[in-house]
View 1 (cartoon, helix red, strand yellow):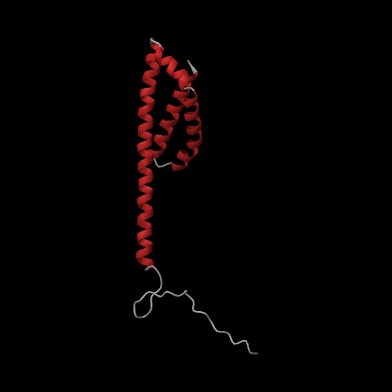
View 2 (cartoon, rainbow, N blue to C red):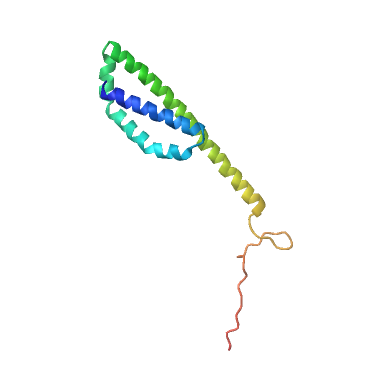
Length: 131
């Protein structure tokens, strides 16, 4: 088995693990897998010349490599979609928390007349220093 096949298999296993972790809400696992995924993607990029050379050949190995690349692409797309959904959900949660905070925090302090106080919370104190 070539180095390219090994990289593709390792990356495929990692993506399966990451997709499973996302599905069960184990975000700490996703965070831990990031550096390994990044390294494997760099290895795959470095092996792209070797992969292209194998794809130009005819035979069982090139057919298997095409199949592995097709499956890897599908896994990458699925992983990307799940990560985008997580990011979107996190962004919406942050917006909702900001709305709640603004709604119940009233955006500052108000005078008895209902107008927004523009001063600091505590008014300056005058201290008699004539002792």
